[in-house]
Image 1 (cartoon, rainbow, N blue to C red):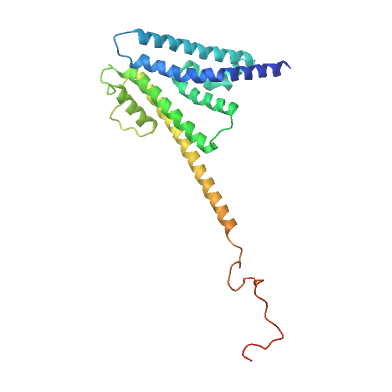
Image 2: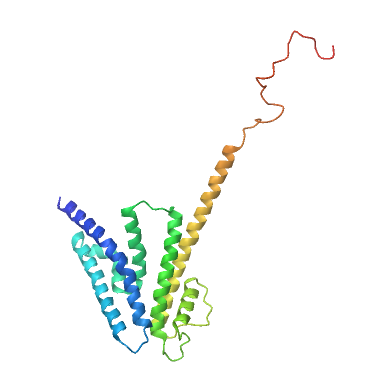
Length: 250
């Protein structure tokens, strides 16, 4: 009985926290972008964004702590919810939680409007775009002003992120700082994983479509002998020949 009440309380908390977390996640990314891209002499916008950044991170920490306590699983919760643990320690991965929270929100509120393959490709694309943007911000923050840096503007960082996550890697701009290269390795690994997910889902969808067409083709094909002029059934409108009449040519 106690386990059931604890589970119900945990589910109730997750339902109530879904929408606030869905709003807080992109707001966290926007505040981080203001902190990195604000070059004005007025420090007020950057200070406000920084305070909001810490407040949102505290909100994520409270949500994690509440779910940890309500689950009653202790250290096992940390290992079973490893993505939440990593995202809490590395806020750069917050875009992954944006997609995950949106998926849970859709599942609880309504039936998914896309097929399984469509959802995989859509979520992988959104995750890739958000991760590229977040990593471009982090790399630009590390690379700007570094000696020998080739990523001097945020545009250079976005261009590098796009080439890295698509596993192209032109090499015209590359990180030179240790943290910048660490972010680069992280983005390349994520790019390979997302590319594999999209490619596998698209291939499965094509196989399913071709298999459905083959089945439809076999179902529409007439059986052997059907429709052949020499095996057609006699029509009811034409009377059969009179067996008592004279034979042809006689």
